[in-house]
Length: 388
Image (cartoon, rainbow, N blue to C red; front, side, top):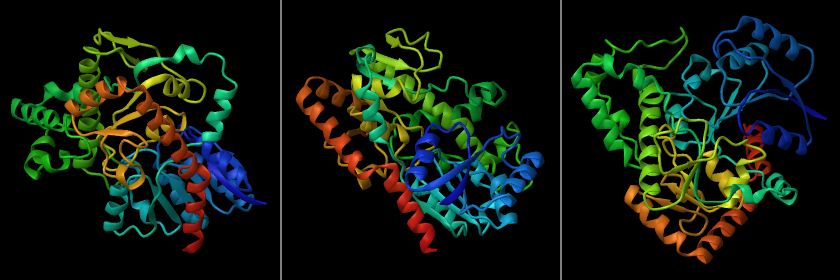
């Protein structure tokens, strides 16, 4: 039997990936350890080398990319395969990305083109997936579905704990005003990212006086990347999501499932947090409309939430993403919007058209069940690896 080594961590889709490898005939051995650092952890590196020496593996696999693991695999001459579920991966901006043993699969095509442009040889586009068989089994054995019924729901973070809020008032008035204007402009632009263009060399030079850039010796990340992703990206997501939920709640019954603080969202029903495996799919199936609001850090790709909604048989309204038309048909599999007013109009329309909404949800489910399974995606991955 073919054998692979998997590093286990808290990625939502880790179990689906593992079970798929096993269904394809692989024996999966797991290794787990909380990493002190994605870049350097000598104790874990030595442990990993010992495990690799002790058996014969076809490759080591991770969800997302870990420089430390890539470097160990390079030293041990073991193929390292990873598949991203987040974007951008700050950990990818590292000298190890050029290691010859890497086979890097990204769900965001923008990232693929960027790393190819940097000279990374083995980086490929692989969209995300959903296990409809697992979800069908969950619903067949569920007796509390009525507890998760909503008119409109959103499952996700509001990013109220973001680093921009912590540093905002350390900035001079000019920079603070500039970033506020940038975020307001970006807030209602869906599928278009203007942050990189707004972070000009002059602005970055000024910002460097107030923002401490912490990175390892082998990191390829810079102030533009770190600030746009970890600071502005999360703050913009907060602004977008809060604005949409507040506006919708003025006219409709809106529920949110989150760990975030929602005390000031007076008209939004706070439903607590839900377990990804056992509860979240019931929210998606039980809600008339499920919202997907993609964080701006995902520049073109289709996020996991969309696959999860459709795989549960839910009706999804999402902000536009450049890759959506590559895989889905608008108003057939799901519905996408281009700005906040467009969203408001479409929510009102589809709440008033139950039959049409249910038909789109069914078409979306059938589509992902036939075309977006983990088995299909991982077979595509394996075909690419074998062809090299």
